[in-house]
Image: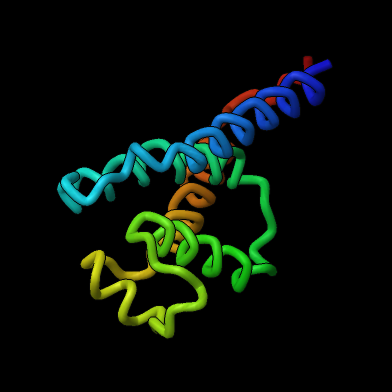
Length: 122
């Protein structure tokens, strides 16, 4: 029951992410870069990193590619344009952060689990 509910929530969030990314009018050239980055980190990253605490970190390349896809999409840089990842990061004034965010969330979750005094299974 609980697994089905979690899965349906994750699917709902994924659908919201797809709808969000299809809205091209949201990111116009008139919008401030810092505002675009804050929207991406608040909405897209939180949806994409849902339940990251339980993930394994063996596929770091896919996560790095996802992060770069987000920044490229935000700046409307096509994959056909010969723009390196470093250049994209310079344009958005960011460093690669998704793996650091993954580690921070995992450590926070582990600390939460270890501080639990009584184990109850319901």
